[in-house]
Image (tube, rainbow, N blue to C red; front, side, top):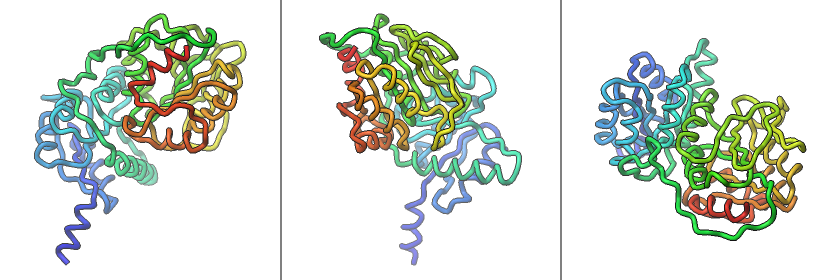
Length: 356
């Protein structure tokens, strides 16, 4: 009987909760331990304590606030990913530009995803938020993470990847459409930082991220890369070498006039903006001059869209399993038959230059 109990305990997802607010720590612990498959093995009230607890307890996942005393969440993630790598889920407030920017930097430091700090007002809302959080934690606890010695991804220290000269093909006025989800911010930074300022195609992107964090993500990417990066706005004219990232809570498409349009279209699925909606519009407008890219992420959003680009004669690329944080989006696109090339993340920038 004791052996059976030990086996059941071993299968639980072991979580460390780090937040400087006792109220938030208690709320998160209650939310998580409503599920018998999750065990909170410890809590931390500052970044230094979180670092020490990770080394001592070896949890399967850490929930990490960003703004904490003594050592903040950014520094804690940097240290954890350098010495005791473990999946880190950032749980951050969206109040204030600094919070959203720091959450984006935390993703660059190696955190696997970011969610809004819960603030439920009713019991039903508490239960719904708790269920979503538990599902995300159980999924992310299985993610393979890598060591980031000296936090090479922090403080704009990513260096553009050296890319060999490649022959130019096709014509100009191409559009690259990229879809990404969990693990996407790190992947996007690596790709965009590898592109030169005179990159010819326009780039349009949907990144699934918790609502309220898109502006911080854009600011962080813009500060890291040489290419111009902005948030999509109604009527914006696509220009060569500019990156347009879809805003929160609304779908983004491109029109035949080469402009951004924001639409409130109702489609199946939880994502708004949707990768499928953007990629399908790019396929319709640009046909053979479209390049579709599907990166790391959970779910199947983007599979239909990248197949639409493939079927119209455009080039399509998927990030491979070994370099993806979560492979399901790319896997679904491959299964649907819409992907021409499946490559490591390090090769995506090279192919974009080749196809430009």
